[in-house]
Amino acid sequence: MTRGILEKNVTLVAGSRTSQLARAQTEQVIALLQAANAHYHFDLRLYSTRGDRELEAPLPAIGGKGLFTERLEQALRDGEIDFAVHSLKDLPVDDSDGLLLGAILGRFDASDVVVTRQGIPLSDLPPGSVIGTSSLRRQAQILAARPDLETRSIRGNVETRIRKVTDGEYDAVVLAAAGIARLGLSDAHIERLPFSFMLPAPGQGALAVQCREDDEKTRSALAEVEDAVLRASVTAERSFLAALGAGCSAPVAALATSAIRKGRSVVSLRGRVLAVDGRALVEVTGEDSDPESLGRKLAGQALERGAAGLVAGRTGRVLPLSGRRVVVTRAAEQSDELVSLLESRGATPLVVPCIRIVPADGSAQLDEAAENPGGFDWLLFSSSNAVRIFFAKLGSKNRSGRQELPRIAAVGRSTAAAVEAHGARTAFVPAEFTGKALGRELPIEPGTRVLAVGARDGTGDAERELEARGAKVTRVVAYSTEAVRMSAAEAAELEAGFDALVFASGSAAEAFAAAVSELPRVRKGLEAEGVCVCCIGPSTAAAARSAGLPVRLIAETHTMPGIVEALVDYYGAQMNGK
Image (cartoon, rainbow, N blue to C red; front, side, top):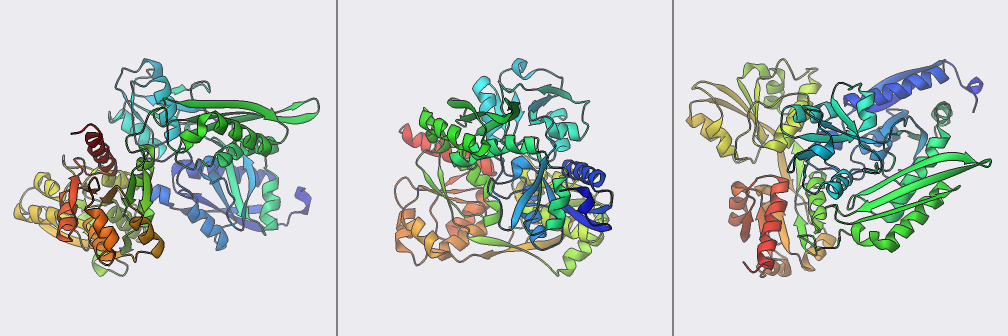
């Protein structure tokens, strides 16, 4: 392609996620495209993805399939934008229908860095220090070298994660070096981790520009900024990941470099597969002139050397939930976190969505609340769904959501994280993550004005407690839940047997009970010895029992990680004869 054949006075629209890092990356690509195609004009359109909105999930190294990309891909197919800029590591290894990677560029550092409060190297952190990461790849490599450290899930943009370290919530956080550099965050206490310690995710540090297959105009423009040498390297890395078939169930790392030797291009690849707890590791290296073939070949070697067991979630020791079939009943778009956590403990999740989330579109009450939230003393959120829908409504009113908001209270940490993801701060979270605790503990005086945003079928516990204390509470419905009809395939999976059934809401428990009322084998299975019906908290447990479900376990910490830890303790006690 040559610049001379490109049309003049053409405008191409770029799509980007809303985060500061995503925008910086997209603006970098636009600047390169503008320099290479002087007669083109470029516009930018921003989108919020599931990965930006659903901040509870501890993400694997490459994320759930399409977690950060599917909204932008849909915008491409709909013709809203002409190209989308992604971090390559966020893209699934298979091209989406009708789309391709028009350019790969921009990798100047593929490494990971650790950010600490006082600049202490990772090797010198005291035992028990808490390291923030939602990447199984990073978690496994940290624990392989420092099993005395604690890794804990952390979400939010780069600035939010670093703030959680400076605020003392974590002792350190591990991030991609490229993201730190693109944001110009050089004043943090940053230690670059050598590749001998931590290999990156396949494609880490590189930018991928996605476009439509049939859009010759955009493909021609993107060809001007393509880095062919980098494409060869990341093709080998992504081929390694694809051939392992690992998905997000095992930590996989890979790094390739390209060089010219004796007149031909040669790619060198180093791949690593680990157990989630870092206690087992398989590493392979090799080189070839065909990057895709090299990735497949080294993946085959890794599988032969034991990576197959790691990819399947098996290590030299039995993971605490190995062999357990656990039914996940959350709404389909919200099941990723629990699925990931269960897989990391060896379980086989069976995703059977029992409800869907339905925003309260056309609600005059919600519109009015979004028009004037500053008329209240406190803004109370009962769930991350309420946060997401309220801030979307706030955005549609062309409001920033910052100066005009009152102090914000959230029922739990995941809800507070969702608030932070929208650029706001949470002033209060109760010690126990329940509506009752929030209503009893929120610091108010009689007459305090509270705007409570939640679900139509919420418990109302927080509101009742606050009203009993003299608060003036305005309750706004942001969404409702609807039962989802169980498919024949899902019913067959349940009838094949399960070890545990997890409920994160009373509505899911009620919908499940109704769905299996005519499935006698499933109802009988619920009563089987060793089968555990687990609920996230007491309100959910009460709803489940009212629906006729035999609740055996309530999570002590009312979060997704709390559910999984409760199951680990429950089955651990069984194994030990307690």
